[in-house]
Length: 341
Image (cartoon, rainbow, N blue to C red; front, side, top):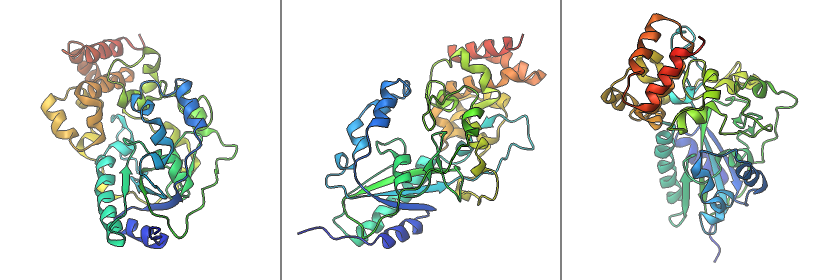
């Protein structure tokens, strides 16, 4: 006996009731493996060790959920408001990272969505993940019509620009209809590619993680390559430059989820971040994306961010950090003290 077919309208309504703003559904056919395998072979994923594992599962939902039939793509906007615009002394913290960790926001809502799906069909099998899992959330979001993968490798929506985070849920049930894949609407525009301070795009839509400041300041727990440091230009965590250049992010966007509002650490100056005690870091970073960088990693970033700041307060913070017990922090501070001389 075949399993029941679920109503796409009911699934979408359930996801919206669980506070997902963007919802789309797609059949769970395997993804084209060529782009991802090329990305790995070219070394553009170097440093992102997790991306080299469980490759088959990343490309085929059926390798994650036996009998997979559908993928639900989900999005939560975090907003385009720039709280640092009137405070130039603040470091540039990527907008997604200023508030609650989006992994936690998606996790809570996906748990609620799973409960609602089980009410529709108590035998449904599911697999849910954000970007820390094995599903290729951007590819599925494009297939499910949420938006298109821009030339900067980020998903873009007509309504929300690119200021939102994604998750997916794979289920072993067919739906009575599916959304159409979204066409790519970048056209001839290449503003995002030209804006990148490190030239991290070897091809449109392809990111070289070795050159991406977001990857370096978040995922790299050793020293950041010297050749990339000047490009940080005040950034202490992540990088929004390519998204800020995108015309779809410039005006008329709705506000983000208020639950993602900035927390104190997200609006703290580079000098203050650089001189946090370990206890202060643990308390302030708990439940935020910045915890991922770790105590030494975030202070390393802040030290490098201060390299372009000639104010006495910045110099004083760097002098203090140049004697830090952490080698990656002290070396970053020493480099920053000599930057521009």
